Length: 157
Length: 82
Image 1 (spheres, one colour):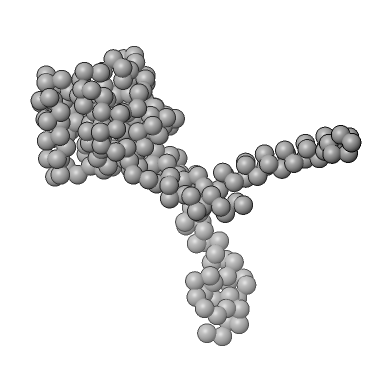
Image 2: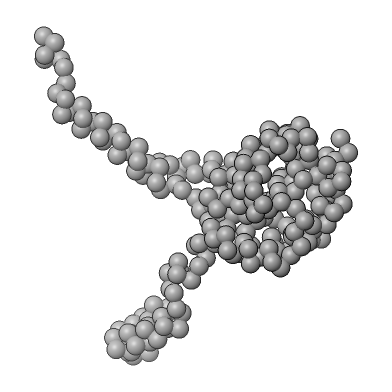
């Protein structure tokens, strides 16, 4: 009986949230107050899940800041959701970078669960209507073209 | 007649308890580690061998006292004849 669920385990590793799916709603605390998915409707939202112990996340922060600089005026809002259990570690990480975008805190990982995050970091682009346009797992500074193209397209709509 | 077909309350309770136990035990084996939980699992206090140097010393003393040259890593052992 205890073995039976193992046969179902691969279902838990099913694909990340498919494109064109409606993005899950969320409300999370930030360093400045609170961020709410409902209040972001009408914006293009880049939800980025990260943690202080994750190396590629460290590489992605300058890129996120660059994307903010380039597209914020065109309607992009970046919400970087921190998944550290210990918020102090996130604070140490954030001291190393210029962070012009919103950082939210989700130590329990509820939002990551809702977005079906499979790797760290994971970036999800949500368009103005609230649909998921693109889900990208991992970060490679040399392979950001597809992400930026998707951002540009979502912002132009 | 009704009295005969009705199940005793204790038996019903036992069956219900068994069902609850089965439901509980079936879901506990299949929890995968979430990507965001890895920070805790990677911490030194979560390692199977917290101190590699201490572990090597302990093994060295154990195997030299037992006379089992090669210890866990090599074939043969105990006779001290290799």
